[in-house]
Image 1 (spheres, helix red, strand yellow):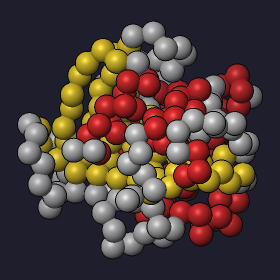
Image 2: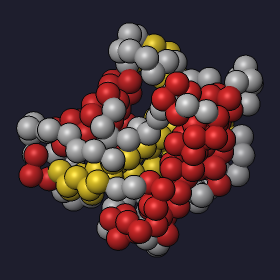
Image 3: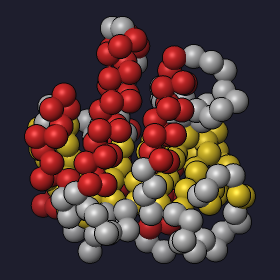
Amino acid sequence: MPSAIIIGSTGANGINAINELLRCGLFDKVTSLARNTIDYKGPNNNRLVQKIVNFEDIKNYRDEFKGHTFMFSCFGTTRQTAENSELFHKYEYDYVLNSAKLFKEENKNKKLHYVLLSTSYSNSKSPVSYFMETKKDIEEGLKKMEFSKLSILRPGLLLNHDIIKYIIEDNHHKDEKNETNITKETKTDTTKVKSDLTELELIQKVIKEINK
């Protein structure tokens, strides 16, 4: 059975992700890297490993990334929480990309699937704002890492669980077969599916795809 690692697991969306990753029973182990722990008492709770980490020194936790083939990022903050633009960029961009880099480095020669919870406005035609630009930069940075599969989940707003628009974008490595409809956009194959789902349903959809 595969194992997964997740960052941003103590926020509302991260907790939902952990619930689904453990409930589905597809993963032998789910490792949470966060600044705090959560009180999880649901199904397969013996498969949850919680590690308190300092993302400022994430390289010191390199061993925690070994042996996983799936990584989920539900990391996110607000400008109000981050206090200023520099801290916002650090929390949103540096922490996510630095963690993804370790995931890639510590699992060489494996087919890796990275799942990012982003925003539906993080594309090149989005209105310019610091928040949107940072999200877009994260997506572009992950694409350059060339994971075997990159799933970008784009809820419209991460403020509540109302029904929202989303785009789920899977970027497959160019030598990997993809039997769904493909639109050639870059060096990778990009598949986009639109629907009306909540953040939770979005995560459930990815897990369903993994289980196929």
